Length: 416
Ligand code: RNT
Ligand code: ZN
Image 1 (cartoon, rainbow, N blue to C red):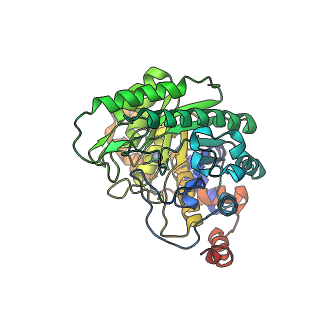
Image 2: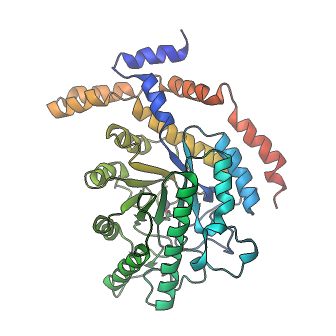
Image 3: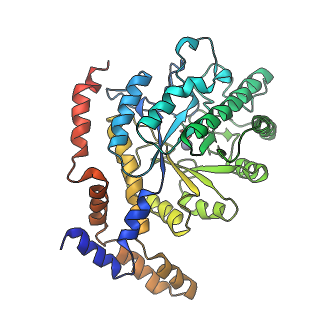
């Protein structure tokens, strides 16, 4: 009997169907962020990363051009499993002759056509998109959509509107929806004199962005809140309460980034809270170490808990899972693959739990057995099911890291 067959039996003894888990895992899309490959710099002229977020490290091999980033992504995607989407930022526009002439408020689908070709070439499910409200000279005093300077505010409103058009183009080209996620760095370093007025301006700006006609069946809009950022420790305009109320009243959705809350708040608990009110929830999976540090996603308890909430609530197509981390201190392709595979592993772990049984125990108040069973499940041979998943998806006996090592020696080392 193979190790997988033995594992299958072990899970069957608890009423868990490993075959069904393997089938379902293939169908859960994960959106992979382009920005791990170049330390969130982009191609439209930013000299450094600004806006309360930071990459640390100077490991060789940062992608400096669209060609390099695409080549790196191509390798990374080839080493990942499951359904994949590409998550782009507006700063990754490929401007060509428009460079230096066309600013972010006037980007068009043409500036992203090479990305569509790329996504089709490697068979991705779809493309997601993020307007880039940071690392740009029009960020004034740390403010964009909530700026008191009307010229600044309007510039960023036009940027948001332009992004909706580009998103529609992505959706039309790929035949899959495009999630447009709005995150702005707006905030203050020190104690504010007025916390309300910037929020009222942000509300107005978002309304102006959403006032342009766009196809809501193709383009989904999310707003991403945050508790604080580096240099903006005292006040964040786009707070959790602000955006949840905004999303609820405007028919859009919330994006939960698990690095964006107080360390004792859990996104795993926020997902079902939102599912009680929303059809869709967007997710940024990251790993904060003491703060929103965007470390590579590891297979940790909270990640498993997040995936359990998605799976047991039948929300694998409602919760839009995306990665969001950027580590510049290690091989960036390995960072991509390790993080993506960990999300897949956590999803598999969640798919292998006897949810109906556990739920019934909770409902009956049978907490003793519930605890016992939850703990028993932790040591079942799910690693063997994972190996089977890899084998069935073309990774039988494959040493994926060897490919990364070879690529590093041949390609990345040459980048200076
Ligand atoms: C910042 C947010 C945001 C960014 C990306 C690059 O704290 O998490 O999602 O990480 O848009
Ligand atoms: Zn995020």
